[in-house]
Image (cartoon, rainbow, N blue to C red):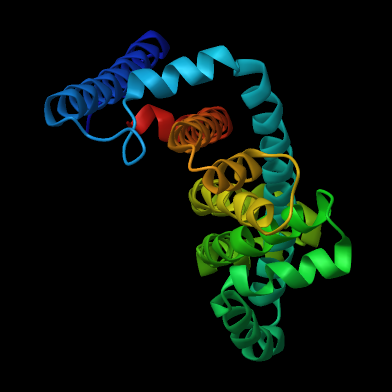
Length: 262
């Protein structure tokens, strides 16, 4: 068995991973730039990264405003999906009747394309942030439900029997046994859900919005401004990396024993 790595070693490893990721992204952009110039690709079809970055630098405050709006709706939908998903997972694990009748309904609802129901949320909730949050919640919650239910079921039977013998309250057993056992699966689901919530927010902005990166993409599409479309996509990619990295940091803080294993 290998010994757990010390704090400085783990930090050095994390910095190494970040550096490797930055190098790979930079290499891809350089390759893209070189191929675009050598092949004389029309900018309206595929703009050069240098043109996209120049547009971002010129109007960074404008992009930042739209990015913050998309980030707000994404985080609201994500938080609601975590709270609602864990609550539904508890019902699925704790009630065989709910699992028998409720889970097929949950799967059926998840199978419905969210783009198809997005206009309904605009009709019901208006054109503000609410429909974007609702769509982000709907797209992200299923990943939370599945992984949280799996984690809650992973508590060994002898540990559950011990909890009953000790006569701890339901809340004590949940906080001290079930939740720690479910954390690895739950965090894995959250990593998936945060990306799905970002997709949901963009879908909502595609349908009806005057703010957000989805609005930027749709308005740029109407004028064939490919540079602006790619600029918004670049910002979306950066947001996705930022949110995923934040969850990875929370995972290391919440489960230091797992960080020591890697």
